[in-house]
Length: 384
Image: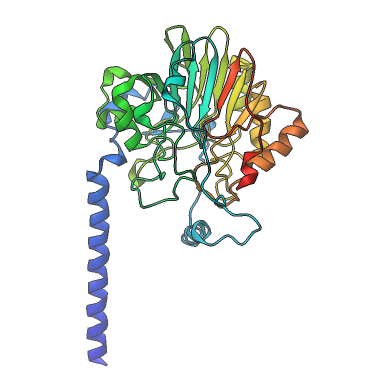
């Protein structure tokens, strides 16, 4: 019996040592790996105290709503199991085959002068051409929305409409928050030397500066603040969401939606977030919008206030007074357990019921906004 107790104690000691070494390795990896981004200093936190969205060292949602899901151990295990279990439904959480994208000729991009054109890269990434300017929103061109390439689901399409090196000079990059599916380390490294100005919500500059972007090329804005660039207005507006690239830095950076406004065109980009009354507030203050890019995907009943369900997406489009809207945050990655094309089927049904036009282009397909909306209107997702 004593012999067995000695073996048990020895095994327990070894187990604790292994757990300790593993924990130490993870901490060192997170601390030393640049893809996790920068750290908000006490000086920077002091600068944000005047913001109504900053309280006790953290950014908060309107009315101080806490949207982070309460995670128990059993809930954590259930979530992991759901993400990696095989799908048994008629359709899959992944498309049936590699999604084909429309490829862009670099020379064609420079031809757009007077019109307004949007090109979707899947998920929430856009190239917008407006008033002879090239604008990127949430440029995530990586193959996996995670700090390491081997973790997380791979992109549904093996190609991009255009590779980063073939993009033209970028006049502005708008970033909505610092989650990996919106702020990609590799993409920023490849882009940074061809970008004139980065526009971010408060705090996000810590990542860009760590990755080599000069402070002079970053403009941080709080909700309801705006910045002008060559007759374009970029407005930082509210969203109901969260932020964080590592466990000890949750909500250290503000999240936002964005408005892009010229004398002819008014565009809205929702960023990520749950449905709340900020959409009506934005619509009343800055609507109507000619075109709205609205989050619609990666929702889950476990985090109902973090992401909108498709029916809420359609209603939010009415709230902001959009003339037509496009569902985004789908078509590129699996970040939840719903069928990959479920968001589109549900939002189409909801939009029809509410009598609001919904635009669903192919990835890489140019969407002409002004002087008239133009795109193929194909139900391309049915091929997968």
